[in-house]
Image (tube, rainbow, N blue to C red; front, side):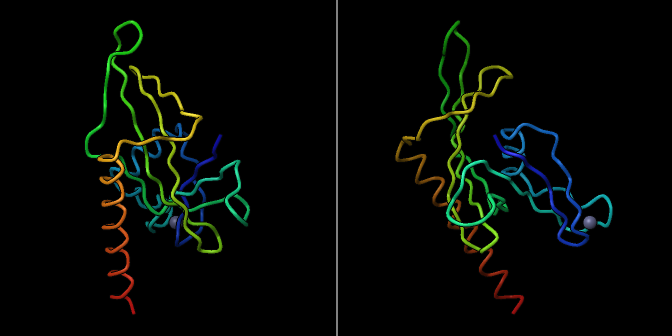
Length: 148
Ligand SMILES: [Zn+2]
């Protein structure tokens, strides 16, 4: 449902991730993308989504991605452990507008099943995400101020 690639901010090369969206977002929330193998420049994660958020071509830079500090797990069918991964993803369109996107997956063993319906989050989990996003935003603002 989404095409993903890393975009080099220096040489502007695009690199398809060759991963499932779940794995790409999971890795991204753990650490920044590796630098460009061609020029060593910093790389951004971009997503092409097949739904529209306002104006634009559906191509977004992923500003940040977060998971709650504590993930919920339970026993599902066949007594297999199921873990719920509710992401909070901040997307930025070409016009600079930012969106909070909350895709989620149920992971059983090695299978990650994408959730198609609107999310209803436990309050504590939601707070945990908002706090992380706020801190990241403040850090970015401080960085931007240092550059001025
Ligand atoms: Zn490069």
